[in-house]
Length: 102
Image 1 (cartoon, rainbow, N blue to C red):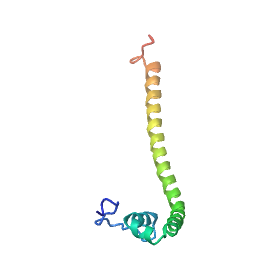
Image 2 (image 1 turned 90 degrees about the vertical axis):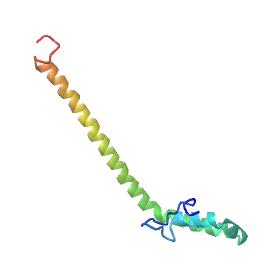
Image 3 (image 1 turned 45 degrees about the vertical axis):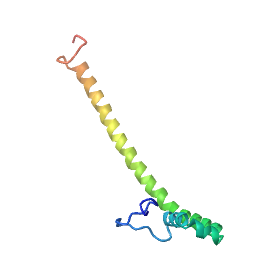
Image 4 (image 1 turned 135 degrees about the horizontal axis):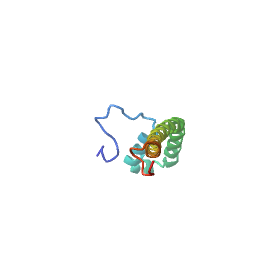
């Protein structure tokens, strides 16, 4: 049942008790109790506070991941451009590979 809720008992990085994910898992797992005690608004506010506290770190880590992916794509495309330029230069300036009759 823990796997169904997104928890992994063998994971080394256990979720903190006040993280947004653990609050959501707790609320879904105990929905009847939360509804019976009418604390939906409290859980919603707690979840909102947890999301706001995690927002700045999520933005920074997303920026780092996006920058790394963009840099990787840039290097790859720059390499392709360099290969095409070098191939064109060889075709134009070297008689061995030229189709222009030089």
